[in-house]
Amino acid sequence: QVQLVESGGGLVQAGGSLRLSCAASGSIFSINAMRWYRQAPGKQRELVAGITSSGSTNYADSVKGRFTISRDNVKNTLTLYLQMNSLKPEDTAVYCCNALRGYDGYWGQGTQVTVSS
Image 1: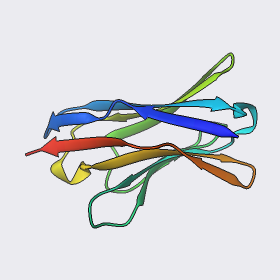
Image 2 (image 1 turned 45 degrees about the vertical axis):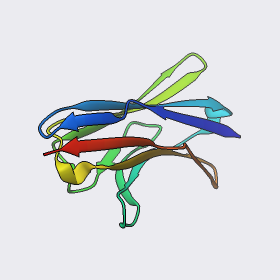
Image 3 (image 1 turned 180 degrees about the horizontal axis):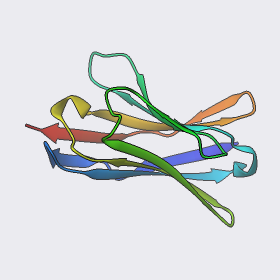
């Protein structure tokens, strides 16, 4: 089992920045890919960014050049980050992290990001 806890969301003005964190615990040794998703009210959940255990990254076109995904694996801790710059009102959503371990996927509870115009 893997537990994921996000933090770092909040209210920010357009053009501002936020850094989301996702702390993983439990059986983290065999996690391969990790991803950030978001879901805005009335919209489908969308993949924002992903990173593999080797460090390869991918981004949604809507966030390329503005968001940066990274992961930090130190000793027995694993933390996923999402640095969000030049935020826009359309980035407003609940952001959730996801971890893939074999064929199993795990989700955090989400953190709200609200960007005011």
